Length: 606
Image (cartoon, rainbow, N blue to C red; front, side, top):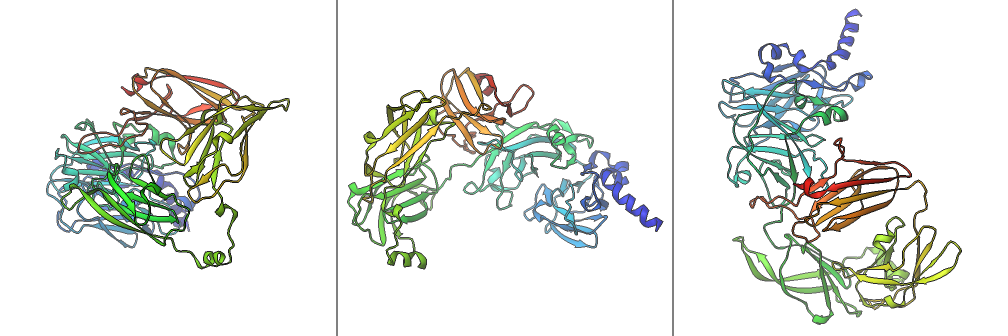
């Protein structure tokens, strides 16, 4: 009974000890290659993660056999491999490591011989959990060499998405001694590591030499870059490690990813922004008939070059088409209310990539069949059970109180309209005395979407007023020959006294910039401005909370965030989050206040 109590006490204490103390030989013989693990402490028994009791070979071992290499980790309890892809070897082999479970041990093996005189790092982070409760093993990096010595340098950094600047988990960061641009396409790296939930990485125990650095969202796991399907990042310059591995460094610890303070305390030497390149091949990759008079085509690459297009049996002037801003998606409408055939035959002359990788003029016949109706829908149709909206010119109107004065009434029709009655709209408002006043307005057609319009009031919008926009009956007609129903939209400016306002003074605006105010999660743009000179921006009607200010350098002044090109060494257009003096990237806005920030964009981006 006493022995069982002692064993239980040790079970609670051992997870608090780093593996360097658990495996005494690591400390005694290889202190520079030991690995410290800092798992969550305390809590009930079923929250305690597994602990390594024994490993073979020891971390820091040299002259490890190259042929039929076998690595064994014995834990204090039965474990399972939760994610085999997280058993990651650096430098990687052509095939991923294999594993098997034997009792409380995980045995790792490889299907090919290791290289001679090379330092390897096997990372177990996010791979192993206990067999019963699924408590995850915090992680461990086993360092060993097939030669006489262990490489001792390291590089740290982070990987983010180029647009949102959110950290990317699971990106593969790679180092190449081969400085040719083709290296990432042709062979595996000389060192690699996966990023954690914070986008952080540490390339440890690498050679003291010059490298090219890349990051890759390696979808197929082959450690080679597939430009048509994967995202990539690269460092503009060559890099040479300057830090020597020391297991006391925070950057080498295996922290609980919920330990924000410890995770943020890790120093990063480089930041890589991942982007998706424009595909190198051009062709039609998708087609769909979405309605009797509506279809779309999707191209593999942007900037599709179409010479001519026509549909059999449809007069050219009856065809309406519209590209998206990237020109890789084309919407097509037939401006004819007559019944259309079940299959449309679209002839397209465009520039397509041939088998030699060259763009050549190609004529392609695209068959666009009507979508199949379910038996339920067909039954309704046969009973002439038609919905009212199926016989109307359908449109939506968006008028949000907190952004009406900047964006106006945003109108989008389901189909292109052939007759418009914007001059028949009535914009009016009620003042606090309930007096009804007719106001003037201006209509703007969207330059990128032929179905979208904006109605902007030409009077100053004030709190306490109610604003209305009325659409009279049968004033708009779409390509189906249907007219609109009457409707009226009402909106008022927010009146909550607890709302706050953020003012941003922009200085040093020598280029064109896109300024976005984002929510704390960066998943929603609250307001957006495009600026090309010094100005003051106002962000009103903000509830108490945290916000991000995103700034994008629009060098080619097209209003879009352009992507990078790897072989041309062209980075995506630079995106930054505004950071306060204390380094925080969130602007905390309390209730009932007006905050003001001054930002010099020239200093910030340079």
